Length: 487
Image 1 (cartoon, helix red, strand yellow):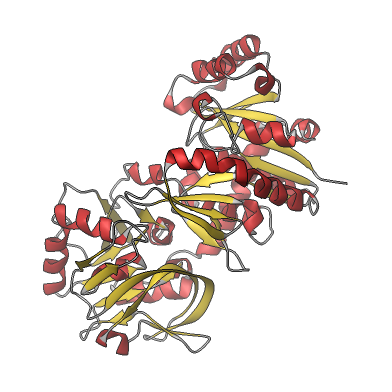
Image 2 (cartoon, helix red, strand yellow; image 1 turned 120 degrees about the vertical axis):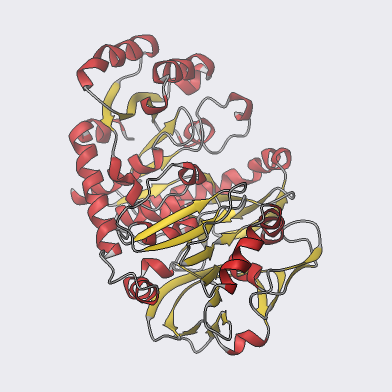
């Protein structure tokens, strides 16, 4: 018998859908249920590699972890990865389906993608007790309702009941929930079995009348008022909106790590474990502001459009700041696209990420990169040349080669070599993501920067936070009622 399913849609982006699904997945898994997360369509350049060499949104990988099950390509069958001027890369069931899809083209493409979505959903239902489905963006995007596969279009096609989530922290939650009921089709509204108000701060008694008024105006069942969960910041973020948050400077930090924020940043959760270290002041710098001159390490993170981001980097003057930092003997680390930027040139002869062309890199590593259609997606293990072990993953296009490859960044367990290092050992580039999530590798970098020993065990921190999130939701939502609503 197929598993029951319940879908969680939002009144907008960043209302907490992903976290609520993750927390409920852990709460139900702790009850002994077999849980599977599912998001029909996601848009993110923060992705995770599955064991079978596919890719899905980072949020679904976290939800799989919360459900205590390995991530699968079927948990996120359609993943849109925005590129520069050429639209988005469309990944279907873990593999590239189309490149450079414009928004209008993608709207028409949805018709052919729905069978893949339904196939993946059926596979998950066949192996679980319950499937927790996450919508995308806003349920009230009626301009995108035709051919929709992410929200009500999927719910109607699969006959899945919907819980609508509103975010009171951003204001206007009554209007956003009642307004959603007002603009969506009656047939869609009939699928909504209840609503949750998320991210509440203060005295819950003051909003009792608000919950009642929403219920009266919509006819939907109030399912809970969920207080703000501050420790959400400890979990890997998927949405780039998280990069916009103002974070206080750590007064007792012993090292400063600086990261220039570029428009097409990808896999930026690589930085989260460093941010969690009390000894590290991780400073994210937007174009328009100079990179701090007192940085101990500059990290260039991944990029979905390397050449486009190199152009932005130069326009912002970051190239001058990075070169000055290197001349002063500072450390620079390039991850994936950041590694490509550190080289002499980056060429895109086939227009994979934008218009065909070739540009000069920063010239801090004696290597050249040629982008190609082939994509490397695989888990990797190995040892960096300082002897520290690691487990991570590769997710990149392009081939990088040159004299500095004779000094690799890492030796892989399969005998391969990765990355490159400068003569003085202070400039390095690698295609490996997830390095700093490995306690051994992160500790080695902290030692190199004279920051002292690592203060956290990152995997344990994530597990404790997921358990705390599950307990938080269980205290403010009626899990039995939610299970009853699922069908």
